[in-house]
Image (cartoon, rainbow, N blue to C red; front, side, top):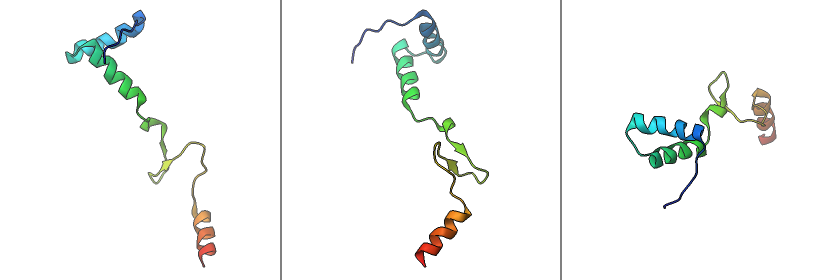
Length: 74
């Protein structure tokens, strides 16, 4: 798709640098940066001491939860 977009000078400089470094067009650099910005951020997912993800806004699942579920199932 063809589209004309006006970029601010600072944004253009930020896009031009990786385009030149990777020897790609400005359009390709913009596409890559936008795709990266649209991906879910892995860095926003924290990990517990055991390595399991901690979902923001949710309380951790612990041993008391396991005991409660086992009690409910028996």
